[in-house]
Amino acid sequence: MGNRIKYLLKNTSLFAIGELGSKLINFFLVPLYTYILTAEEYGTVDLIFTISTVIIPLVMFNIGEAIMRYALDKDANHENLLSIGIVSIIFGVIISLLIIPICSHFSIISNYCWYMYFYVILSATKTVVTCYLRGKEKLKLYVSCNLLNTFLIAILNVFFLAVLHKGIKGYLTAYILAEVIAIIYALTFGKIYKDIKKFKFDKNLCKAMILFSLAVVPNSLLWWVINSSDRIMVTAIRNVAENGLLAVSYKLPSILTMINTILMQAWKYSAIKEKDSKDKDEFSNKMFNQFLRASMLISACLILTIKPLTKILFAESYYMSWESSVFLLIGFILMGLSTFVGTIYYVEKNMVGNMLSALCGGVVNIVLNALLIPKMGAAGATLAATICYFVILIYRYFDTKKYQNIHLFKKEYILMFTLIIIMTLGNFMSVPVGLLVSIFSFVLLLLINYNFIIKYINTGIEIIQNMTRKITNAKQ
Image 1 (cartoon, helix red, strand yellow):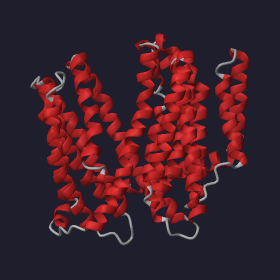
Image 2 (cartoon, helix red, strand yellow; image 1 turned 90 degrees about the horizontal axis):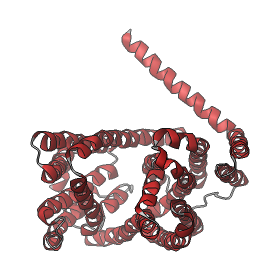
Image 3 (spheres, one colour; image 1 turned 180 degrees about the horizontal axis):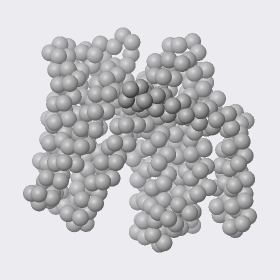
Image 4 (cartoon, one colour; image 1 turned 180 degrees about the vertical axis):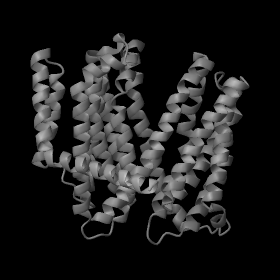
């Protein structure tokens, strides 16, 4: 069990470095963009990248996901997988030419058709290459490649925007050059060029991978619909100002999303490694237990402090966004748990179940948006999203039982979730009563998780002591 945990922690730390590093660099770039680009120009580049995000998985059938998954099999032929990736890139280069005539009909982006074309094919190529690195478990190289890419975007944008004053074209050129250099870096240091020389196309393997990838594409689009429909419907049913509250309400809960993303990227590797082990159910449930407790405790801390945090961090006009945030904090717990359970589909190469569960959630989300937004505004949209994530979790829980048995309905889990809901309701009660209810529920939650908390405090102390010891020994 020890080696399994070490493997998971090592991968988690690597993904955390990559995710946090990229987020920090992008965060510090926002003032530059908003200072140099006008609101119209920034809106244009945002539109270009939004469209490109949808196009990229379509032109290559999201083949990168299949390459990564199939490469993690014990008997994987990596050269054959890369060969299929190369064929997909060639196909993508040709089919992406349709971007030029289509985009030329839209005045807002008509001057940037070729920039979009090159960004799409280069970004898709980088995805194939980096997924290949992930599949071969060269995670350090994968993370360094993504960090290099983000760093280059920052440096090149400063050069093209602040020095050369090239506006939108300079912004897009910076992204394109960054993709080119990142691809060269991955090919060179990952020694992928050696595998390219061993080109061998396996027709049957290609069919299996395309079937896997085709189920991933609509799943990705469905998640986009779920996450974007709220804002569109709030704007249409209420007004733009209400959508502003909704946008701000996502800021604090997004902390959970980032943590979930890091953990789930690492968990995929461990889940695949354990696919054929005799005690995979026991190990998976142990990790599910840890993940659930951590998610609930982080969410509970944010729910308890959501009002003062909102008051401190945002302008007074955005204070009521806390109403939406509390529902999202529950929703993101459910989304994290559904992603954990959904990993079973990924392990078993059955992405159809993943897609159907997202489809059910998407339908529920849109119907509830139509019912709740007129009455509750932005808070109605986030409540709808929370119920949507619950539906996805329940679907996946029952559908994946044929592969693995995750213990979702343990009495202790139900009690903890009930306390989270009571804490949420406490925020809507009058100040003295509601605050006491929330604090009492929070203390009970801490008591239930006492052993879990003490264990990780001791682990943290041990890590700090080991680091201090190493630094002391190095100085001597």
